[in-house]
Each structure stands twice: as C-alpha cells, then as structure tokens.
Amino acid sequence: MPPAPPARPRRPRTLGVIALSLAAVAAALAPAVVVVGGYILGGIGAHVDLTAMGTAGERLDPETLPAAARTLVEQSSVWLAIGNGGWMLSAIAALVLGVIAIATRRGRAWGVVAVILVPISYVVVQLAFPLGLAGGTAPYV
Image 1 (cartoon, one colour):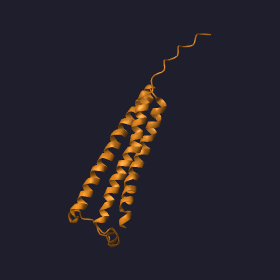
Image 2: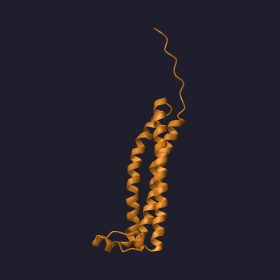
Image 3: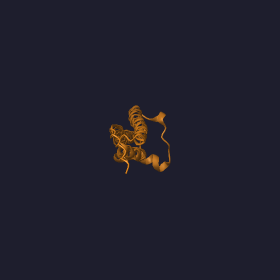
Image 4: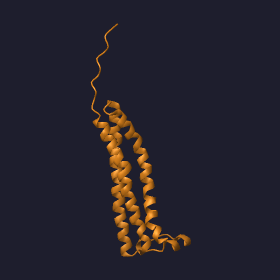
C-alpha cells in the first residue's frame, strides 16, 4: 500500500471572515441608514397636505415647497446617498473577497455565506426606504 500523501497545511480563514463582515455591514448598517433617510423625507408631511394630494392625484412640485421642506429633502438625499453608496461599496467588496476566499480555500464556508448574504442585503436595502418613508409620514396622514 503506497503511503498517504502529506496533508495540506490549513490556510487561514481571515479572507472569508472579512468578506462575511463586509456582507454583514451591507445587510445591517446600510439599511439602517436608508431607513433614517426615508424617515427624514417623510417629515415633509408637516409642510405639505399629503392626504389632499393623494385624493386629487396631484404631483409634488419641488419649486413650490417651503424652505424647511427643501431642507428635509436635502438631508434625506444625503442619508440615502450614504446608505446606498455604503451598501454598494461593502457589497461589492464582500462579493469579490467571498469569491476569492472560496476559490483559494481561505475561509471557504465564510465566503459562501458572504456571497449568499449580498443579494439578500440588496432586497433588505430596497425595502428599507419605503418602510422609513411610511414611518416618517404616518403622523401626517
């Protein structure tokens, strides 16, 4: 019987863990920031009669908004840009590092979880804005 081939030394799992950490940021932190942006934008209901607009089928003209409402729109835009941009950067990095971790066997299981978590985090981020917007407009409807 021939001798068994020598066992490969175990490679560190660091790359897979980093990929999973970035995917967790994309799945948890980015949606939280987007919810805040939606909630701030929902505060526009204090300056505009949303119920009357909904029944009349009117569209909101940004030029007719008071200065306080424009400020809310600007603040909301900043929060949404940070949330969506942060998601994009962390998701792309998690995806790339996860694939590399899987291919090079450096934290393969962690890399697989990261690659699976990235598309799920996309759905979570897309649902976060309407939830925040609904929460922000609720007191004014």
